[in-house]
Length: 239
Image (tube, rainbow, N blue to C red; front, side, top):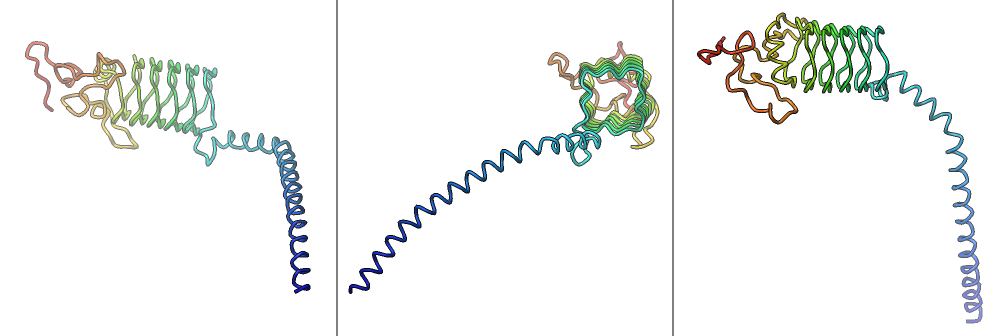
């Protein structure tokens, strides 16, 4: 009995000491971990800067273009043909008389950009946000603008031969003006430009979907082959 009692007292004493030592050990571990974290965060800044530069050079993580930033940039009269601008940001950029022929823009942001007389021939502008963009006399020959948003944008005098506007969102007045001279077939998609704009009597694309609620309803008469219906009879070309 005496031996067992002594063993029990020894175990209790050791348990007490081991608990105190274990607590001290955890405190030392936590202190070391926090110090290591501070050192790692400070020493990792150059590596992070190098990574950001690499992502920018490769047009973003995984090469999807999310790091290319040209917001409010002066790109006038510059040449950027056959480049990758996927998901890039060109908000309010000055792109006047620049050459972007053959470049890829799909998923990019170009709202409020000024692209007067800019060359987008053969460019991929699908799924782009081009709201309130200035495209006066811009060259959109054979460009792909599928599902692009062109609400309140100005396309006056733009060259659109062979351009594909399938499912693009364009204000009605702009669409009517483009239908007056639209022609050609896109060499990449094989889609007729007039058909993609909904010229003629296509009920599916007969009117635009502008951002203005006053213009969001269908017109009283569908578009004719020249962009307008017969004023006297109100009938449209059914072809």
